[in-house]
Length: 245
Length: 182
View 1 (spheres, rainbow over the protein chains, first blue to last red):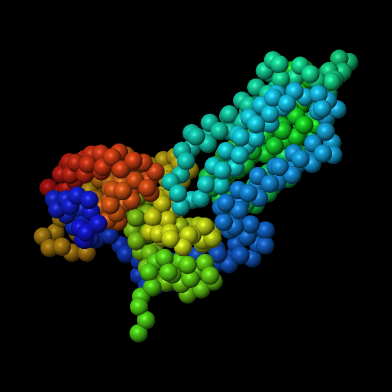
View 2 (cartoon, each protein chain N blue to C red):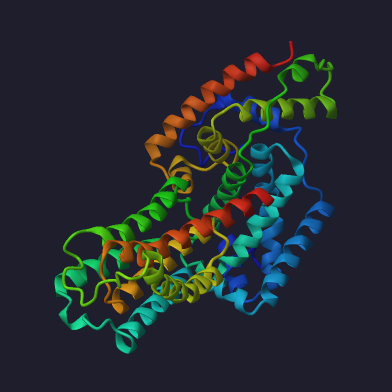
């Protein structure tokens, strides 16, 4: 065994080589068979046109994902803005958009971390998904963020009734982003949960730009719940997939 | 006569569409990746599956490969990440049946059977190391990577990797002393 690359030659460890000498090696036939399997996987993935999105360089994948969120949010602000958007205090708006946007960006960056780099710990990813739910709840519940709102929930309706349209709208806004993120994903562990966290935050951001209704029950059930449902749904699917393998 | 292409030249050729370059890379690296995964997983079928996945992932990430990049850390990191992912998903480690090893009577000459048993002994000892120490031994000793590169691959500092390796080697020596057939 060459010592040239060793930082500390440890000749007394030669017994490891000695012990490893009897391990089974791949024969030429094994190599051919294994390569045929790799080739089949490669050909299969190449046959799917949309599957090739994941083969784009990583900076481009991240850019596509973030652009999708920017387009959805900008489209909402331009074509379906909340009635009181002009009266939204700029600093408050910046705090809301900034906190959601920065966490969303972080989720995209970590979700698309290439497999040839050391993996980010599972707990960091779990923490990020939990933080996404936390930020959505904070935006809904922190006092002062929604003091300016133009409308209050209709008291004649049960909380879930006035929250349901917003909840559905948020899910619909997040779904295309989630689908794109999954297409851009290369099968990274926990990727679907981080994609869901980002999509949920995207839906939440859209609601902040679209819905003028305030009140904690509406904001939690109609807005923050979007992130929760995305994350829990994806975590459940992730668990089922892990169990299947 | 043409000079043998480097790993990086082959990879760049593959990125540019040279399919034969991928085959050449595979022939060069598959046995190494297979040895690495086999020592970690202690299962021949799984080792082959992870080797296959490693090259499939390499194919998927090929457009990230930079002109000034190095292929070896890429491949080894992919393989190590897949091994770790396997452990996470299976949530189990194979328990070592030490008694069987102790009962195995060595022959005086180094027959194939003895070599196989000795390799098994090493696998058993490696399996008793914590995952973080095992991957450092794998990369530093068996793959002959310097500590700096091992640190890059496992995503830790060089100092921490040196400490891990030192502890692992001392533990391996002790384990093998205890496991060796008497």
